[in-house]
Every structure is written in C-alpha cells, then in structure tokens.
Length: 154
Image 1 (tube, rainbow, N blue to C red):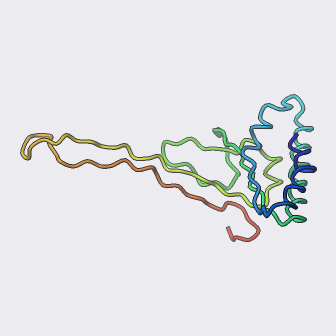
Image 2 (image 1 turned 45 degrees about the horizontal axis):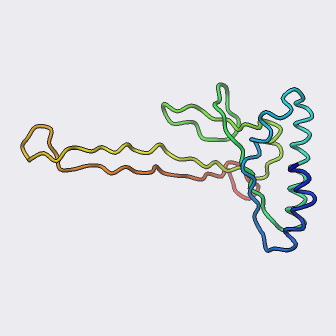
Image 3 (image 1 turned 180 degrees about the vertical axis):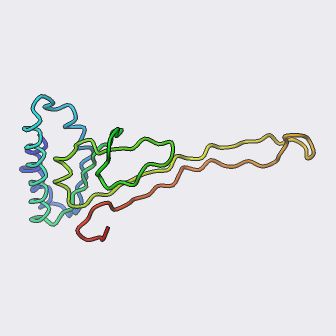
C-alpha cells in the first residue's frame, strides 16, 4: 500500500501543490509485525521503499522525514546514539541494519525526564518543615542531535 501510494499518488499531489516535506510516521509500525517469517523479503521491500523515496526526492525536490521507532537494547549499540543517562535503558532503532543502510541523515530526538513538582506547604516561618516556596514542574529539555549526515561532520 505504501509503495503504490509513493509511486502513483505522491507525484500527482506534489505536482499540484507546493509541498516540500513529506513525513511518514511511523514506518516501523508497518514492518514490525509484517512478514516476520520472511525477513529477506521484508528487507527487500524496505530497500525498495527507500529507493522510491530517494527517487521522488531527487525528481520532485522534496524532503522525506521517516520516523522509525525505538526498542530497548540489550547489547552493543552501533547507531551512533549517545550513551543513555544513568538509570536509563539504551535504545535501538526498530527496523535494524537493513533500514540503517537506507538512511542519508539520521537525527535523534530526545527529551529529558521532567522534574517532579515539589510542593511544600505554606506553614508559618519558624515552624519545622514549613516553607513558602515550591518548585514548579518543568516539561523536560528536548534535544535534536544529528547522528549521521553527509553534510555535517561527526
């Protein structure tokens, strides 16, 4: 279905509209359970999809952002991602080695865990445990890091 959409619908939509970015969220959702018994065929389909996106990108001057999912990693991670913070589990891209060979630029979007709000009661000064201060909750810091790109030095 995705391949036919890329081949037959997307070029017409791009020709009729001023689109410069196509986002596919999430390609991994289509493949994580699809063709589990035939990994070579699944890999070939992934490679074909990537080639079709690259062809459309070059011919129609459009960029693709293709979102992959992550899973917990229990072994060595060769993705170029930064090591996890203390107490966090390492992550690995869900589509694995085949998809990693299709990618031109790889970015990592992450968010630090937010601080918990610390609310202390407004007790009179001098009363043990009392404070008129509280720390508001924060949403956590979001970061984007370029892991792989032919245009950016490592």
